[in-house]
Length: 100
Image (cartoon, rainbow, N blue to C red; front, top):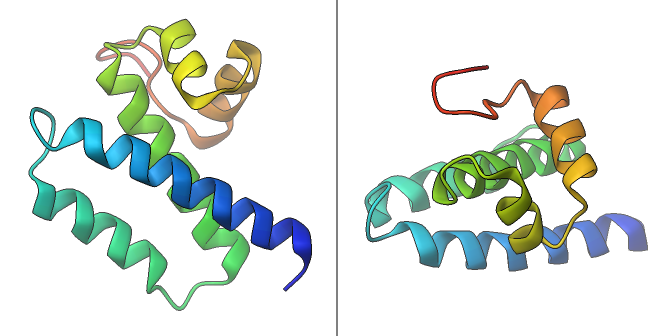
């Protein structure tokens, strides 16, 4: 595993921790969130696929957390809004409530 992949994993773990803490109270139960993350982490899929799946989960949950305000979600994730829009298009994530 290269240094880039290790850095990606560290960044994703930090993002997971930030997102998980903010969701326990109102979007999902703690158990549901941990089950989703645990399934991805323990998956037998290749590392790149698991990282992409975790990134998608983080982005989806963060966007929901901020009521689909992409600027706030991007700020929270510490990425440019254009990067967030690009990722949502790539993963097919809803960018507005009820709209894909």
